[in-house]
Image (cartoon, rainbow over all chains, first blue to last red; front, top):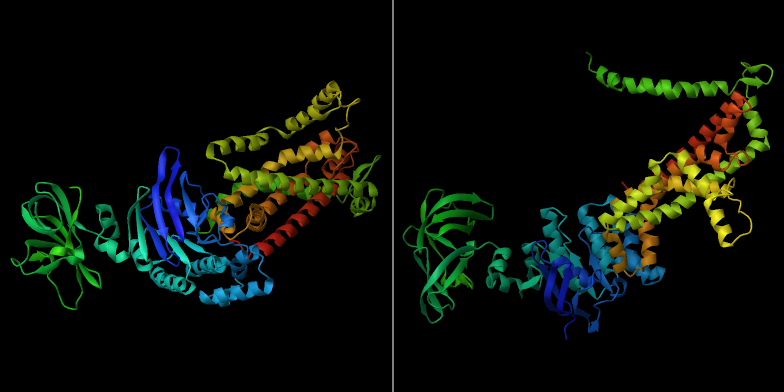
Length: 350
Length: 284
């Protein structure tokens, strides 16, 4: 019995389906991300879990109870909103204490718990400030404190870090993750940022056009994305269209624009397929020693890595190399390109 | 041309018009209020505080000032009670409905106050639509007296001034993060608590600003009280008018006008100061 389960949930607005036939089971204490581009239905799904919207069909159960149509104030869910939605007329302590007040927690206990939670998010000295006087990161932590102080059975995070700048965002990712571990609350994060989803979640549900495209642990779905959309959404992929020219065991030979590539997997001979390999799986070797030769069109230094664009008979290739501390081949040079055979994957439809 | 000249030249025409149209008449009124008047000699330039003393000591004027400010407070409260929920509902409507309702709310502003007030007179007069209808239906035996009552003035002024409250509250509502209501609900608050503890305090600056406009406009309102209140229910503005044009005691009328102006400025300024002080820490 899962802690939270969405069964065949759909949401229709007029003629358009925002969420279609969505199924998801979340275990207690788990951190799950709903990942997808804007308009993929992830926020709608979150709103249905929170109770701000009702599903057109399907059911939502929280710890075994049908909560599909329950009012939001009866669901015992903590939510961190994208805009934080702090109460500007209340101090930090009053903001955080609001949920406890609604639960009729006594004054002394309320003060105690607000203090503890503010300590957890390291905002103790800001207790008497108004939200206006806080920075973005601090407001974000107030929003988090307000959501977890009520010890909700479920914590929903709606793009909680999108308003922060890159540096603070990375720090907050780690901090959020640590706090979630410490509190142990079941958490659902909605985000369009794949790095954020991968950094924080136990499992990721990739969504596209209102449907679940892929569900799994971050490493698993990154390495075995299953479809083109997931593969491209989680990271970039070099794609080649080709035709299966030979099949032997679990290895097929694919003819892509005249280049024979050997790929692990199954596909009928003569079928048109697409294969893909991630930029970081490709290695550059001396010309003639690789699978094919390619000419370096651009080379960009990114600090931790080099980003290349190569011209080859397969088309344009994106390659990233770890910066190992020494100079690497520059623009205009002809190099050999190679990758391990299990790094290239078949994506079903050609 | 010197560097500092253009700003003065550009604002010059407006300043000249302002001085001629507003400052000069006001100063002249102020000067006039210290002159004397008698029926035989007319206005004479013996300056003194006697006009002000008369207004301050005569209970006839006390009653008028009291009535004026009682009406102002009543109208302001009613406008807040009607206008704030109206703005909130308006804000939650779909676009099409909102434009229609906005038109209905702002429509009255397009009609002259006199015409609108005469409309009320037609409606509530002894032979007005309401009385005729009630008599016809047999609900009452003789016409209800609605004209020349304080209530009539209040209702008509609320009708005129409620758009100002709606617009003022609506402006603050647009700055309200639509998610705060959801946040409040998710924390366990009921709809009522959310309204009372989360939404209302945030639109309070709008309500207070709207109140200021409504209060100031009511306290200096002339047309509506003069038509619906008549001679029996004078307010300060109509009294000043009568002193000028009926008793021809211009100095006394000027003194009344000056007191009304100063009282309004004092109320508005101290109120503004209070609001600013109260919300400075909270809102931008």
